[in-house]
Image (cartoon, rainbow, N blue to C red; front, side, top):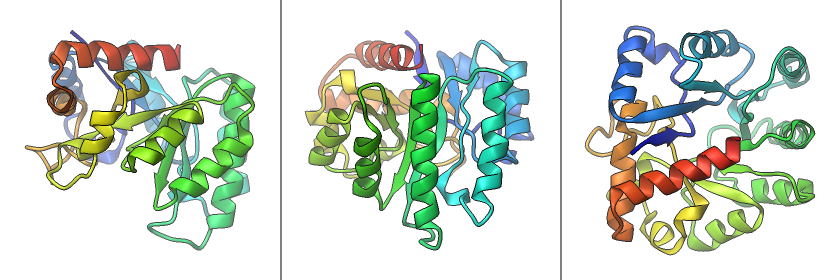
Length: 254
């Protein structure tokens, strides 16, 4: 049995004191791959250093998080795009739209998302989408950019069954994390309705730790808690959930 964490920021400062021990705990928990979405130009060095230290386990993605889109977004995108000339990446991200924290640069967020969708198509790699209070706005840009090859994950999916079907119809998988274990997370109808072939697992470490670790720092070793919750909701063996979600992740990032 193995698990793949499709979304974890384990290069973040929250792990500076015990990074190696955290990695060991992940491996002990049967985590075989961890995909690391970038944040902005300042997070690249730490991300690539961790990947270099654990190349078979940690995989870097390259992109600009919507919450970090500011006045200088064009210069930041220029710096980020330059990395694609230096090496390959497993995906684009973390991209998307966020209307929860700050609406000041929403027009710029939309422009940045369109550019990153174009990168995904150009380099033939998946895009990882952050969407908070902006699912329909994000979906509209995805559908506008979709020409048959755009693919990826709606990360930390927390929408309705209808929105889940819309994301799937757009050619995307749904990223399921700690929220699935929350008592009032609201994901039960989605997880009961949507076939396993459309789902991947994630932690979003260091955020959104699953029950019973809710409120604490999240880490990849907690991923089996999410998988077990999914297995319980679908009345399936844990091994089947692990195998299916890992196969989906492998196919997406291959």
